[in-house]
Length: 355
Image (cartoon, rainbow, N blue to C red; front, side, top):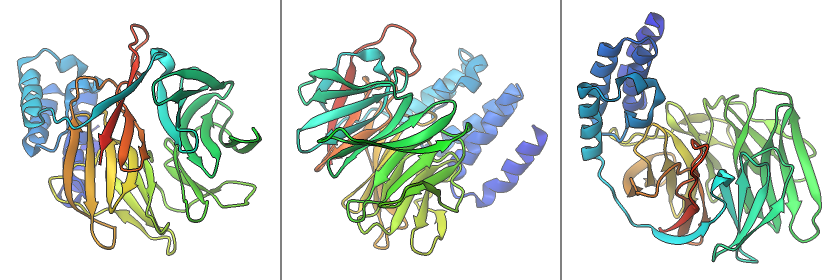
């Protein structure tokens, strides 16, 4: 523990995201059950007012109920009050579906949800009428629809795979990556070129499937804890949510990768869903962040965040807010996938946020 604390404290002065590193120091002290030091660094984190919230972080479970910890949590919540601009769209009655991702078919005006626990995909109308679409798929995470096909990421103990399902013919094409130790998480597809890019979270990698290619290939840079992924409209820049830097920008032509520039007070930790919309990135942040949806307006070269706006935060429906899908200028997203529950599931609320 001592060596890790020393490493983090040396990293802190030059860290891209000092907010996240400060919080990580608190977590490291807590991992060693050094509670006074953990409280000290949590106070430093709270003073930054960046939105980091330790209330649901299990590593601090032993501190819950203590006056010091409760005071910190109260301060964090006072600094990050609820903001609401979303409207109810529809509900999915199958509350224990635990969908990590959703997609939208513009041709038939239908939504697709992939189940992490049930190994299946459900298709729903915009009114919430749902039916099983496919099963036997393992752990289903990312979903996207492009050119009349549903693309999905499937994971099992023996392999992770990209699967393309033609919505007209029903034809399937599978692109596997055999072996354990990986989990394909989210994907983005270029509407211009048809290139597919996807994140592998535990391996910290991004994979690429070129149009017409038979196999997946890894991209060279390392992307620690790669999760959400987005692509610039010209298909030149790839945005990957990472930890602790928040977002890494990859220039697909040169291969150069670097943390995105950002205002000093902006914390980009725990980005799950990530989407490019009209010169901005729209992000869904969860876990150690006060759950929120934010818009990050980009610079002209699209490699730095110039300003940001919190669009939704601490909605009372939030219980595992993860990802969504852009439909024109609207973001449809899941408010409560309830991934930490084992019983007592509520219908899944789908919210609509006009951008």
